[in-house]
Length: 77
Image (cartoon, rainbow, N blue to C red):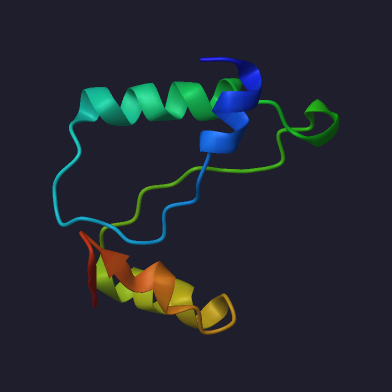
């Protein structure tokens, strides 16, 4: 696939499935994310995994009431 085809095929996913992701797949995703280019190569981001529903609710509240932060395994908590 050409670079242009790859760019055209890119999409954002905002609908999630209820399934567990293996540690191996998580590590592959983290590696890919850390190797991805960023503006000015600044890498000004963090990747964290939060599974505690109460902590997710607090995060949703502190981030402008965004319910997406309360999504755990595809279900809103």
